Image (cartoon, rainbow, N blue to C red; front, side, top):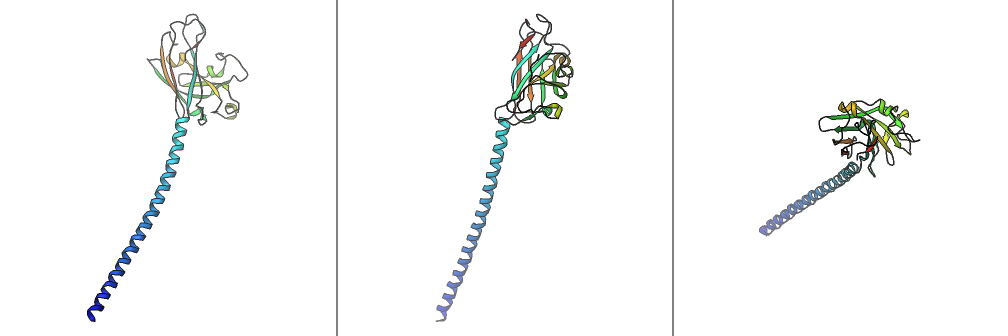
Amino acid sequence: MVGRKFRKNEKGAIGIETLIVFIAMVLVAAVSAAVLIQTVGYLQQKAMATGRETTKEVASGLKVAQVLGYDPEAPGGNITRLAVIVEPNTGGQPVDLRHVTLTISNGDNVSVLQFNTLANTSLLNGGNLFNSSFAAWTKTDSSHFGVIVLQDADNSLNVSAGRYTIDSGDKVALTVNVTSVFGTGLDPSTHVTGQVRPEFGAPGIIDFTTPPTYTVNIVELQ
């Protein structure tokens, strides 16, 4: 009888130990599942945020729609002014022109220009893009470009009111005083490269070669 009781107690003890181990395993599994769910939720939110930022970075930026050059002595002479016409990428974020840099090179020299908020002009009511009296030309130098507003339906580029943002539907000409930047004008058959780089997003690309001769004052270069 005594031997049988001992075996029953032994079996009961083993059963309790098994139950304790089972409960511990369930608790560990529950904690692990909670941690896993938390981690998956965090990673999902992080991935969505990264995706949004990446989409904004890729979609945003500026594109160079056209580059025009001005030769005051054509036929002959050389190009003394450049108008780099830019607009935001489709679906992109607004761009603050105060944080835009314009890099330009003629093969011998490279210049990095920033926006001079005093060098701005509006052509919303028409006018000559290369009018030499415009502040966008008179206040540009070897370190700064100017801005001529060509399209601005929402008045986001009202510089006098402290607004310098180019957004969807806007178009501006960034003005470069070539003789100040390079010390001389652009001769015929000169390869010019550069970028119009916003604070974030893709830069607009400048890449053209001037024609072998200038026959008119205003030359379409890109």
